[in-house]
Length: 160
Ligand SMILES: [Zn+2]
Ligand SMILES: [Zn+2]
Image (tube, rainbow, N blue to C red; front, side, top):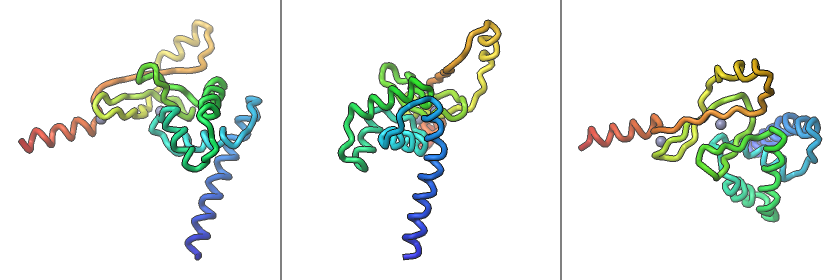
């Protein structure tokens, strides 16, 4: 019983932390605050694996059965438009979503499909600013084979 209460408290604390973080942000940008939008932000805040719109919809649908696909897709569009989340096009036309927390670039592994955050400060930002332009988004995409896949390959080679 004690454990159960403790667990509930942790869940509530997490929610409060999240609401304190995102409600002011939505208010500041004049975006209507809805349960669905908060649920999407919570999901992206907790999952940094750059999910597709469909991934987000499928996961949230388990918890909110009445949730519609259109609502999820529209909410993602709005949150992206106001710069709260980013839509990555590293995989081509299919958008992959990321919460906007600290500027970072992305590495796509062509073998396992993972998109990995790369903490890089782009040296060209200051140059672009020096021309008088205002930057709203910076995207840096790298593609190749990730460390895990390279190691797996080495293990296989050694075994044979
Ligand atoms: Zn990989
Ligand atoms: Zn990312």
